[in-house]
Image (cartoon, rainbow, N blue to C red; front, side):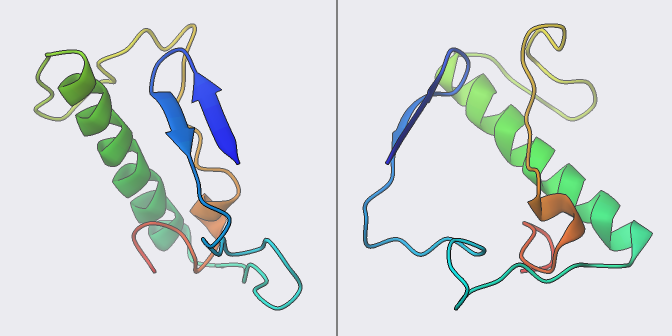
Length: 89
């Protein structure tokens, strides 16, 4: 499987990789805690920002996104509200 977008580049995922929620054997489990949802979001956003800055010879020291948010986003759906999110897992 390959994911391509204009901001983060081309990513190739081998068929041996197992994604949570990909099958009934590995379902996503809903997270009810609002504070953990926020932590999942921020961790994913931070990874996107650092990756973007690195790929574009820029720096990111926290705060606003280093990309144009009117045309691009760092979307971690549906993992923000699951135990498989980037902070919780």
